[in-house]
Image (cartoon, rainbow, N blue to C red):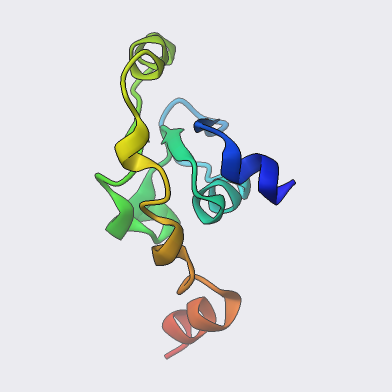
Length: 97
């Protein structure tokens, strides 16, 4: 599974809301695996605002067609190292200081 995710050119991770306010758990898997992540998630609400600009955000379904026809290689593996600090232990220590 991880090899397949890592070898993907891009992953699309929509939220369950058009406002991007329900953060799917798959988002963190995709970020950790390394492919370009295309999402409409509210990164601030997810607690990962530092990856803003390092993933590709879309507004609506029409954006995805244009995004997928562009070169996304500069986004590949960019957040993988950043996600190493988002382990449960690190996140809990940030939340319960």
